[in-house]
Amino acid sequence: MCKVNAFRTLLFNSLLVYFCFSLVDTINEFNVGILMVRRYIFDAVRFDLVHIGPALDIARETCLYEMKIKLNFVKGYYEQTCNKTQALGKASDLLKAERIIAFIGPACSDDLKVVGHLATYNDVPLLTGLGDIIVNERSDYSSLIRVSYDIKDEARAILAFLSRFDWYNFGLIYRYEDVYYDSFASQIFKLLLMDEYKNFQCLCKQTYSRSLNKTILTNVESVIDSITKCSRIIVILGGDKDVRQMLLIAHRKGITSTGDYAFIYTELIENEAKGATPWETGIRK
Image 1 (cartoon, helix red, strand yellow):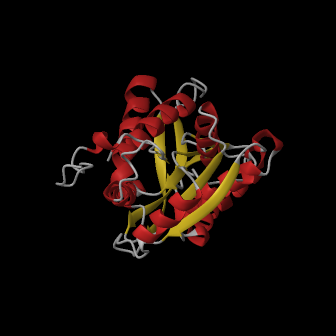
Image 2 (cartoon, rainbow, N blue to C red):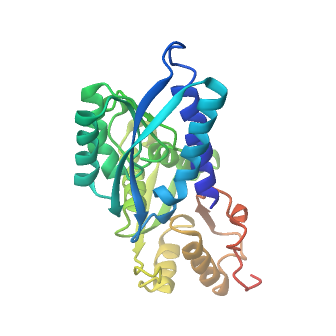
Image 3 (spheres, rainbow, N blue to C red):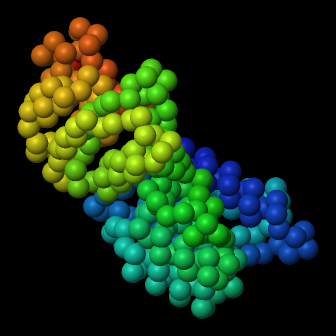
């Protein structure tokens, strides 16, 4: 829920600033296309209309009562999960049928890529709170307003942290066949090819996979054994529960108690803020 709240806050603030303060005072009614999955059934359930809709309503009411600007939300919803074809089709339909001055959404990065090109061609502002794994040059989307973090910046942050301690050789563990973590790892590898990061070397990499019900299918103990044989500095790209399982195995093997190894795990939102999902899950370790 914390990531959802962060998304809502960013979306709310950006919506107000862009659509309210920048509009001409004499015009007070505008059509805004909403490109969003109505309700996810497969994946990123936190970022569908059911969860984000209230933030849009708050922003619309604030614009109306405080700025005297009426925003008419025009539906461009599609069903079940991310869908590039549906996102592009809905955006195209809205541009043809309605006097749309801007789009909000989509959240899915692949959907955003195709809609972003259409919006750029038509010079229509496109506001999203996600699109975090788009790796194109920012100049490719001249009308895109993205209020999320950038996965490139997150990759740079990891290398900056390692350089702070002169840890230039490291091992990498990441979740395989996951669009976010695959893209994250790919960005790190691309940075290592640049002159700026020529001192860094990824000595070894290990991957693991999960089932749809979030059960780890890979032998994690084997992953830990392999990675600790090749590097003492280990970067993990995975979910908090996956990382916890890995560190418990490392703890059981005595790896975490000697001070010889360092495990680096990036967490965008402090896990304690989730409240109902405690890190310990009933085990005091």
